[in-house]
Length: 351
Image 1 (cartoon, rainbow, N blue to C red):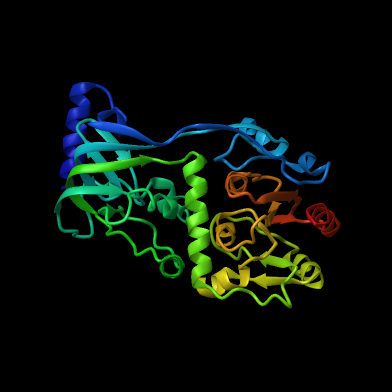
Image 2 (image 1 turned 45 degrees about the horizontal axis):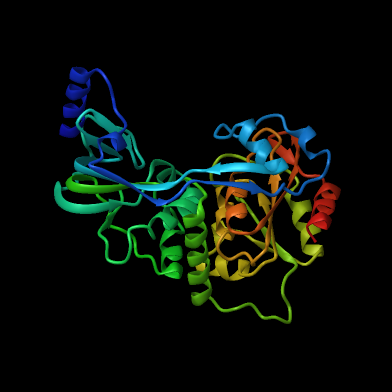
């Protein structure tokens, strides 16, 4: 039986409320303050926005318009929270009547998998729900979070979806995986609030970009590619580019390298993306392959499905001093298509 879940349910019934786990912290402190900062506008053709029919379900127009047009963005602080006597069961944390989902998988009354129970005196949790679900968030949020506790601090994570490329990127970045805990009582657990793109994030992004460059071979200066086209493949949420062959042919003719991550090891992917001045790709988690190897002042050019528009990666490019451009496709049977002239004109704006 899932004893922590049963105990949580009883306490919730008695108290009549479910507090946020952070409310039960013995101590909370600020690591990096909140920041109000103007962001640059995204690069796009004048009529691109006319083709948007819907946003990603995770995005909202008020935020997207500021990232598109440029404007003041409020970046949340990074904070730490020390919570005592926390129970971990699968993907969930429990403490009194509070519950938090921090990993991948459903809440189970009957626990499966046979994980042995642990008693842990002190640990820093470096996983969250989104990073356990989506590879792109794992690369751009969880790996930077693992730099927060400091060298030698005891880190743990909870159950996460298996990512094909995780081990390879950890080797490149010299980041061994924290122990994954499925059943435990942690006497002193430090949690992090770390979604804001504040000054601390800039420092950690720069550190990961530097680590990657210390591991890989610098590209030959005599024949750099114009850029890289990063194929999405069939992974993740469906965003089918129906004329991808024509897009690839047009970009190859301009000197772009065509890279398909689903068929390559992380070291090869990162090496071929290393210091690319422009990376073109359909919007989605696979774009995270580019965030650490792309050139300084490089540009992400994102091919946006008209019915799933999202500016998630502009949050990263703004903080990492990179540029962000996009073109919006047109509806097509079973997906969307990108007008080749629109793409070329967008690339002209980037050059």
